[in-house]
Length: 209
Image (cartoon, rainbow, N blue to C red):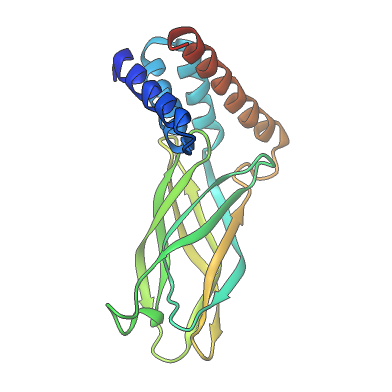
């Protein structure tokens, strides 16, 4: 990543603004690339990001399903995404399922294990890595147990589920406290995100105008 790449992206944003088009995705891309650029040269920003990674380390992560959905052609989750909100809790939702039209047994195959990455700012993406087959009815996940390591790798395994007779209820939304009630960690994590945003904002205004 070079400074010229950031300038080119900033120019695209300005063009979109002149056309009154939504440029929120480009702005997010610019901020993310600026962070990548600054991590090499700005020791303070690098240390803040590394601290947040350490704050997220948790070997006793309990993830609870708090909402199920029912769809006529619904199936079980194969991908989850989400983020850590300002309250310090991580919220996940099913954003991808296996199609019944590509696999007639899709609604009977429920995930028992997910793996993915938690970024320093709390953004999460996880994919199902193990699944089981329920011949009659279905199993609806209720709770997972897992961990987040120092590299941001997250994994969780199903430890509690319930039988569902008709097989048309599926896991939709999950939540967990990655800080296990440690308010000091929660507060520091949020403060660090705000500090990084300030460093990036000052850099972009100073370098790109």
